Amino acid sequence: VIQKIVKKWSTTITAWRVMDRDKSGSISKTEFKQGLQESGIVGLDEEMLQSLWLKLDADGSGEIDYKEFKGTFTRWIVGV
Image 1 (tube, helix red, strand yellow):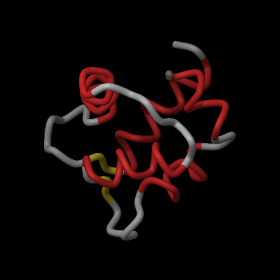
Image 2 (spheres, one colour):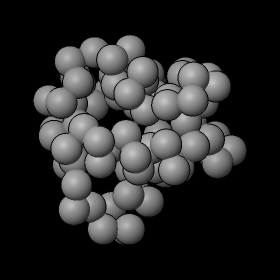
Image 3 (cartoon, rainbow, N blue to C red):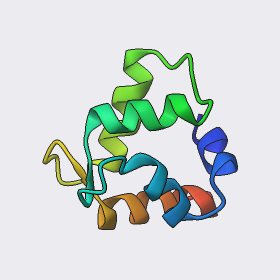
Image 4 (cartoon, rainbow, N blue to C red):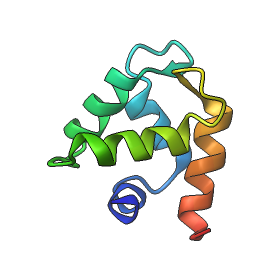
């Protein structure tokens, strides 16, 4: 799934713009799910969505800020 996400968006900022739908500066879980679906990444069960969410929401705040997103997405791109 992570490889699909990385292949879909070539840069962190592109992915961020798709996910931060309301341009609030953070991504809610709803925005995250919608962003994945609208990008053609569908069929993920709730367990996989939760796993991805927990990787991105590093501070456990319930929202993903750009710093968290960029850090995780960059690690995914380089394969760490």
